[in-house]
Length: 194
Image (cartoon, rainbow, N blue to C red; front, top):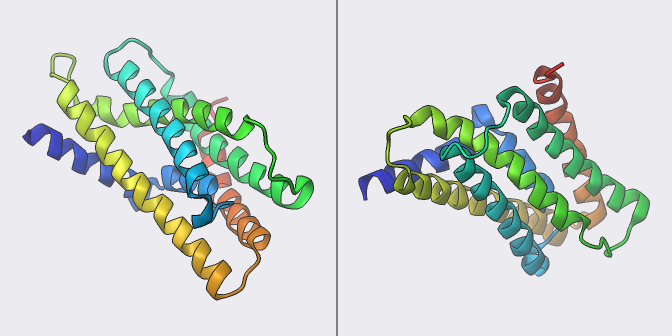
């Protein structure tokens, strides 16, 4: 049981680490267009993202799939920019609630990419001989706890800005998404693999 709690704490700290805020930016971009009244949609997206990144984390931890670390380190900020850009297009160009399943599909696919990013860190902590199921479950649980914290924080921020300060939803989504793109561009250029 010690391994589970130890690795849970590592999972929480890995996501909420200010030095590695890429996962927080992705979750912020994913959540920015929504409010508490859209909680079901947010739960569906978070569940798809969670399932996908747990799958790729496990596949990598058990050496079933190997991903190029440099490529993953580039693709993670790319997923952030694409998600935030999608928000901007939806808010200012398309202005439609009907998105089909594009958001669900992309969130799942991006979850696979983020899972390989988590696996880079997780695999550094483990040797090939180590028992992995307990640490893997603990690490994934820690990631989920931190995701809930981030998603709730963004929804709370949306509530404050939109319901208390009177900022329109489209403006809030646009400002948050634009800020995320600007914060992510340096990560994207720094991790350019070619």
